[in-house]
Image (tube, rainbow, N blue to C red; front, side, top):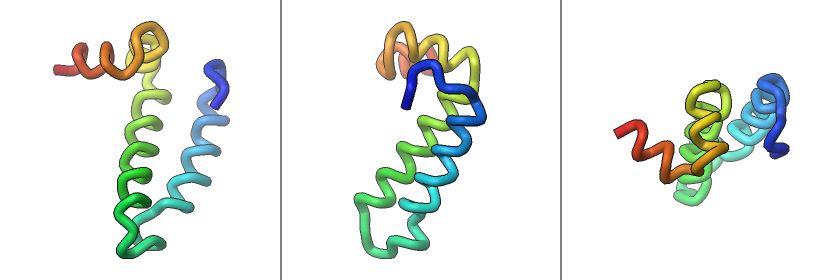
Length: 68
C-alpha cells in the first residue's frame, strides 16, 4: 500500500483483502484467520489520523507503546 494512500484507497484494499481472507471463506485455515486479524488492525490504524501519524513516524512498536 502506498504510504500516501487516501482513506478511500485504504477502504477499497481493506474490503478486497477482508473478503479474500475472511475466516468463513477459509474454514480450518489458521493462516487466513491471522491475516484477517492483521488486515483489520491495519485498517483500524490507517483510517485513524492520529494512529496513522504515530505509525508513520515510529512503526508498530511506537503505536503499541502509545496505546498501552
